[in-house]
Amino acid sequence: MTVLIGYARVSTGLQNLDLQIDALTQYGCVKIFHDKMSGSKKQRPGLEEALKYARQGDTIVVWRLDRLGRNMQDLIDLVNTLNDQNIGFHSLQENLTMDRSNATGQLMFHLFAAFAEFERNLIQERSAAGRVAAKARGRLGGRPEKYRDKDIEMMKALIDGGTPIKDVAERWGVSRTTIYRYLERK
Image (cartoon, rainbow, N blue to C red; front, side, top):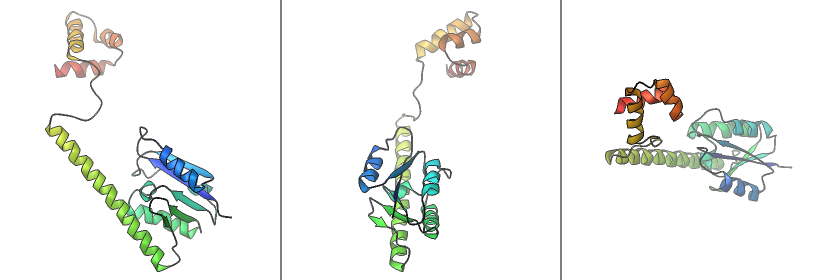
């Protein structure tokens, strides 16, 4: 009896796995493993658990191909490993069931893997272009500054008045290094 094993992944902790998990559950996956980390990471604990859990005759199911592999070569290596262990593979969005037993199945897999990598590269290029455009307009990415100018002025006044940096840092709930960094900017 074939057991359907789901694997879901999102790139950051801010993203949500619900869409993928719902689709995998609806497809009939009895066990679903997941990761909240970039697909570019080699160590993905959820994927490793799914691969350990799968037995001969089972099928690993993903929402989309790009959720499984870091790049085309990684995706091909993973599917070849599954094939060697007689474990099936299915991607829901591409409606692709891996049948490596014939040339057509192998060709279809390689085509879809190439398209998935192409799409991932396009997303990276668009993101980089967006960051460059934002920077040109004076918007920088990253976490917003915690303290405003008046806060920094007050820190500086306290230090100029003889209050030790350690005490100022404790009062503001930050490290001394943070205080020094803010003072350097002003």
